[in-house]
Length: 315
Length: 249
Image (tube, rainbow over all chains, first blue to last red; front, side, top):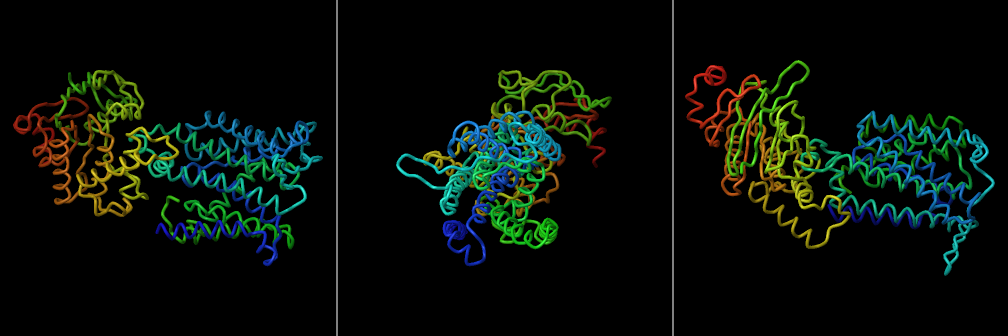
């Protein structure tokens, strides 16, 4: 059991580390791989809350988008530095999540989900309307990512697709390893306890709201990190990145791959991104195919594609 | 000093009076039973002690502190643990993990993002202790949801025990069990009371269990105390026989 899991983890990391090399053999390109990694980070961050705390958020695009705009606005108006942009994006996204989380953490189930959408839409409309600063409906353009200068080394993420891929994978790995470690910790086990049986958890002496708030904050921190990487990849900030349907896409990725499985959302994101890339070159109606696949998965593999392996709940 | 003093508590749900001016004093080391017909207010009474509901009147003092309006988690920290009428466990986790979560929370480790080795050893030793006390050891790695009703119940009781409570409240520990399971759980409760010197209050419908275990029995009927005394006194009490025992026979 334990060996199986280690082997699976090793395979996943090996595939990710070598992706730029084998992706072209199967008709892909490096930027597509970067997109998979970045969106997978967002979906796995959402799943920290959804799959391992049992709390459904339909508003994670807000914090993803704050990462996107935080980076774009910083590079465009403040400091020409990719790292500074990432720092600002993550800090802004996380602070917003901490404040909003404190306001809504008492709500449960569908009420919580609805309120997360509502708060998400607030940020969307700000980006959409504030033409002078955010570019409004046209998005924020007129800036681009800059090579990362570490002093001892320079990583040219601007001109090298490989560099950008590994830069993204580096942050993906940090975030994912932290989440995996947390889920194996006493704190992580209290989250599973809340997911499994909130009443029992409360009467064991776990302050439920506080633990959900921490889980929410961690989840949003990493989703805003994903947002900053997404902005680097696109050299553009799109108000759609903040909208509720983007939040829905993250949920679809998690459910598609299997939200009780640690790697499920990665598989879901890969399928989503590849299908989108392939089908959208054939027809504008690519979302219909994703929708159809989603319905089939929910009907025949309710635990998601990786759920058929029926691994134990904890990663 | 008494461990628990419930002073004249009441609970109204709209116009319904579920519990009406009930008082109870429990000394350390006691094993007290609360019995009464369905709808007598037994579970509501428990819910007020554990913080599930606030009383609409009266006061609850535990271990010298007024806990009438404390949140459930804070009452747990002060030493009140409970089980529920319908078993409440973490079904998709193993018996070991169920116990481990309870132990880690009780040891103040619940916010730790990692465990130091000595903490980990201590937690594992305590899991082993609890497994041994309850005879759950052979099932330690199975998911609780796959176990028999009786073993799920035993897991729930051991989780409550993992909290090292000063007071344990058991809400119908043998509900829905066969004879053998009822016997096993009764033996477990007796063992906890005797060996761990645990103070226990239990709600129970099975009179064999009550008379076998309890030193004192309180009878509730229609939200009020009908009688309070030793099992022998209760068995001889005419009002109780009419309200409860007679009806059950």
